[in-house]
Structure formats: C-alpha cells, structure tokens
Amino acid sequence: MIGRIVLATLVAGMLAGLVLAGIQHVRLTPLILQGEVYEHASEPQVAATAETTKPCVENMLGMTMCSKEGGPVWEPVEGLQRTLFTTAASLLAGAGFAAMLAGVSFLSNIPITKQNGMIWGVCGFLAVAVAPAVGLPPEVPGMPVADLLSRQIWWTSTIVATGIGIYLIAIKPELWAKVLAVVLIALPHIIGAPIAPNTPTTVPPGLAGEFVANSIAAAAVFWCVMGLFLGYALDKYQKDIAST
Image (cartoon, rainbow, N blue to C red; front, side):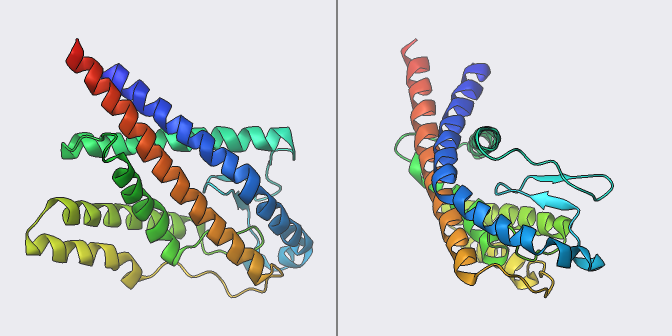
C-alpha cells in the first residue's frame, strides 16, 4: 500500500516537473543565455577582484556545482545536453516537492484530493516560491549575489516558517494561532535576507526583471499543476482501495 502511494506521488510530481521543464526551455533558458553573455563578458574584471570571485555557479533550480580549487566549473554543453540536464533536474524537483506535499498531508492528516489539490499547490507556491522571492528574488547570471550558505539558510528557514504559518492559519481557529502564524511568516523578512555585495553589473535591469517575473510565473504553474496531478493521483488511489 505504501509503495503504491509513493509511486502515485512520484509520478504526479514528475509530470509536473515535465511541465516545468517545458516552460523553462521556452521562457527561462533564453533569458539565462542572455545573462550568461553579460556574465562572461565581465569575467576578466571580476577575476581581478578577489572578494567578487565566484568559485561556484548556481543554476535556475538553486543547484550549485563547485570546483574544489575554485577554478573552472563543469557545465553542460549548449543544446541537447543542457536541455536533458535541465529536464532531469525539473523531474527530480517535481518528485521531491510532491513527496514533501504528500508527507505534510500524512503528518497533518489532511488528504490531498482532486477537490483541494489546487489549494495544496497554491500553498506550496506561496511557501516555497513567493515568500523566499520577497528577500531573494530569482537572479539571472551576471548579477551580484550574497554568500551561498547564508542564502540557503535564509531560504530554507523562510520556507519552513511560512509553511508552518499557512498551516496554523488554515487549521487552527484560535486567535493565538493566527497571531503566531503572522509572526512566523513575517519573521524571516524582519530579520532580512542576506544582502548581495554592491558590485557593478552590466546586466540590464529589464532582463533581470523579466527573469524574476518569468521564474515566479513558471513556479506558479508548476505548483498548481502538481497540486492537481497529486490530488487526482491520490484520490484515484483511495477510490481503488475502497472498491477492493
């Protein structure tokens, strides 16, 4: 029984990841390629400044590849290889986030169905995409960024705090729960996200803004589609169990 639930969850998440991969290929990858042109053009100047040297490269999904010596980093070749790696990363992200939603559903004893699947997806979008983007918006290559570890800690803490806050608002009718939820949701932003160094960049503001807007829109579609797919998959599974 557990195996079938896990399989239904992973399939739903990977289907949503496939949708995300398509959006990334059409909308995000062209913007990233434009950003990389400005990033590579400024590399000689950046390399001359020790404190702005980046030994790591972070891709659109937050996955980072680093060389141990801080030298050149492996990157997939443009074309089919890059598309395949991006698609694989999207499939893994979909499966992982679907498993996360299913786990929260199990722990909270609130089933995900085709009636509320979209609501689960919207809550995931708010917690994982919108809340962190308030302090750390998606960054096109070539933009100055804060320390990677600091960003990861703030990003994770914001997701956890926002998720708990959404749970308290949705489940607990008591006033104390609502107040605590507001405090938890606001706390990461009161503390503040890590601040990027004030280094010059040649990336046009329009390109950076377009990347932020498209990234958040892609995340919205991804989470809503995943909620729907997960709701239908788990709902169908529950009906199959009831009929046997």
